Length: 189
Image (cartoon, rainbow, N blue to C red; front, side, top):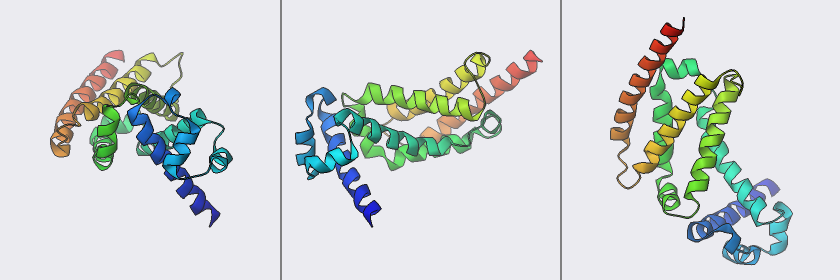
C-alpha cells in the first residue's frame, strides 16, 4: 500500500509543479507554493525531494523514461527496415498527451524540455546501438537528425494535430531517409 500512496503524492506534486512551470520559471516557484498547490505538507515534499530543482529533475526523468520506453529497442537496422513502427509510436504518444504538449509549447519550459528530451532520446538510441562519440559520427548524427526531426514535427503540428496526416507525411519522409541511408551504405562499400 505505501507504494500507491507515494505514487499518488508524487503525482500530485508533479501535477502542481507542471502547472506552475507552465506559468513561470522554476527560480520563481517556492516549495511552500508548490506544496500548497499539491495539497501536501512541506515535510512530505522533503521526504521525496531535496529541493524544487530535484523535484523538477525527477519529474523530467519520469517523463523522459516514458518517452524512451517507446524506443528502448530501437536499432538502426529496425529503423531502416520499418521506420513506420517508430513514427506511429511517437505520433501516438503525442496524440495521447496532446493537452500536456500544447500547454508545454507555449510555456517558458518548452525550449529546455525539448532540448533535454532530444538529447536523452539520441543518447539512448546511440547507446542501444553501440555508437560512441569517437567512431560513429555519421550514425549518431543521423539518429539525432531523425529523432529530433520526428519530435519537432509533432511539436510544430500541435495546433492542428491530425495524427493520420502527420503519420502519412512522416512515413513519406522516412522512406526518403531510408533510401538515402541505403545509398550511403552502398557507396561506402
